[in-house]
Length: 208
Image (cartoon, rainbow, N blue to C red; front, side, top):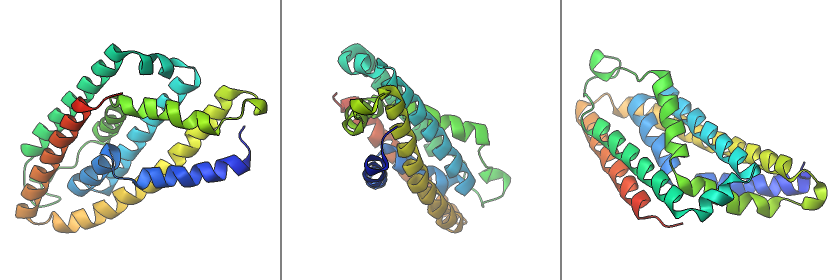
């Protein structure tokens, strides 16, 4: 297990990285504003589940194969882009109505959780980032490199929960107030759809 002298700086860096604007925290912000705090927090849990999978993949060494395979990288990023286009389509056609009315029904929790999982797992940049980032804090002399990687991944997930959970809570609170207006709901839906399309384009154009 990494010593506390390693874990504390790693936690600080992980918190800063989680605060940096990116597809995942933008996704949490939009979903929370559109569907409420509970939906946003559920998305966060889904995203963190994806991070857990990425950590395990790095720990067992499979990430190196993905990083070396242009075909695997392309398949993953195209799948992720298509999923973002699907989310954009859903946002554009989302019903508009007062919060709490049938026209603005809450998304099932399971659906929001799966959105988070798929969003994270279909972004090949995440696993490649973990492959480059986590080993820098591993000391082979401490033994059990795979265990050290899993511990570091868990700490990164804790940082993500703290930051993304805060984003979900604030976005949900303010979104609930703003979304009482049908005009604001429509604007948020179109903004969300546009952002999803932009993220899809960015992912398709991304390189390893």
